[in-house]
Every structure is written in C-alpha cells, then in structure tokens.
Length: 180
Image (cartoon, rainbow, N blue to C red; front, side, top):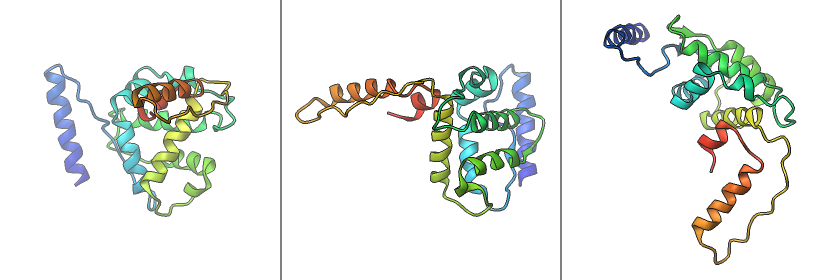
C-alpha cells in the first residue's frame, strides 16, 4: 500500500514538474517506532502546513528566531529536531523517514513520550506546539498582565484587548497560527 501511494506521488511529481507546477505535499511518510502512530499522524499534519514548510524548510527562519534563553523551553533541541524532520520529509530523497532522533529529543523533553507506548495524539500535538512556541517565542521578558474586566463589555473590544495583552508575552509563528 505504501509503495503504491509513493509511486503515485512520484508519478504526480514528474507530471507536475513537466507542467511547471510544484506539488505541495511532504513526500515522505514516517515509520512507526512501536506505537508511535499518534506522533506520526500529528507530525504529518504539521509538516504539510504551508506556513510551516515555508518557515522551517524554505526560509529556515527557526535558525534566526530560536530563543535559547527561555526557561520554559529546551534550549532549541525540540525546534531543531522538528525542523530537521520536516526538512527530511520534504526532501524527495526517501519514501519513508524513521523519526528516531525526533522521538529521542521529545522523550528527553517530556518523560510522558520517552517510551514507545501508545499515547494520545492531541496531548502530543499540544506538547509539540507548546514546545515549538516556547523555543521560538521572541519575548524575553513576559510582564504580568491581569485579565481585563469582562462584565458588560463588547466582546470584540474584549477580544482585541486580550489578544494585545497576549502579544506582550508571546511572539512566535506558533502563537500567530494556533493561539487566539
């Protein structure tokens, strides 16, 4: 089944390349390591997001925006392992990638994911996005901000104030795409 799908992708690549159109999809699947389908499915979704492809693979913005001093992060380990994996998935060199290095890095960052047991995909995705956000968060100082009073306020006005307050503490591609 995997071979059939990949040969179809290669055929689509050659046809679209001849037409001058670049296909938009990560070309490599991820090999299961024990029961890591929860991780693989979440990673496939993230790797195929156009803003992620542009940010991590084409422009390599993470190299300039990794916050190595954030005490809530992992000194760039997660973001660098993620970027390497996404780049491999988009490389057109292999049909399948073994995400072992990424799995080891994530296991060191979060004990819950260090084994090869079945986990919840939503919990993994939340951890992954939060880790990427904290490692890419360019806000060095995070001021304390009290929640605004919401009683009898226009929801649009309240939402704008909350978003503005959030930007004082958070500034990353992950925050812009997934929060708010």
